[in-house]
Image (tube, rainbow, N blue to C red; front, side, top):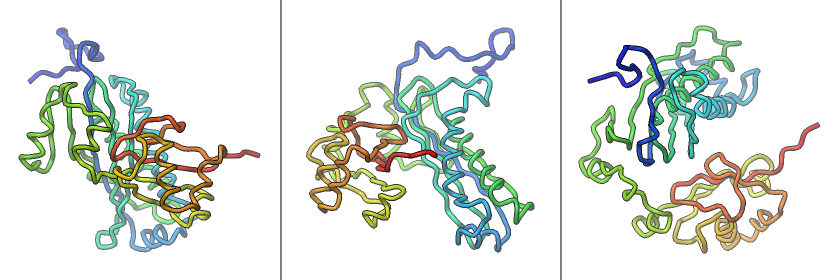
Length: 271
């Protein structure tokens, strides 16, 4: 086994990935922040002095994933298509489990982006809670799985044989369009999130639309499907309602795929 970040003279260098084919790359990483039971209770109740701890840590983790190349010297700057940060409050262990997931279609993997996202999200949790608990510990930061690329798939826990067989082909031919994905898995859904005042207006924070119910596979199709479900969603046709697909600002004509996360939110105004 050779270390790809060393050249023939043993010097550190950035790996040239120009000749690699673009394929789907994914990585998932996890970590934990252990704290006092009272601190976890305050976090759960929203009673910490700095405000919305989890929302701040989520934004920090996503931002860190996008800027990994500025922190790790030999990482490439990547155009990530999806970054998610999830938190699980564990009262039995008095900790918060943090999970980051990164995805792109590119020439190099996203393991470092997922690990950086988890690390910074954990550090942000510490920063947001340290006023009441300076004894918190961060541990267990590790890669859980990666998919795609020349080295194939890897998982800390053994993958089911069927999943390994279906994912081993990382060639461009293995990629499928949104329409093909729908045909393969007609019950796949698109996760819809309503943020800020839209959450109160619609009395809904999240909604899952079945792929088969979409009249078209774009943002406009999502709006029409929601309105078909309930006329209250006609407010989404208002030009002042903004939309993001997988954390990227999107217009009505933006194409979508099963598993995408779509967020609707009002314009941010400053003062």
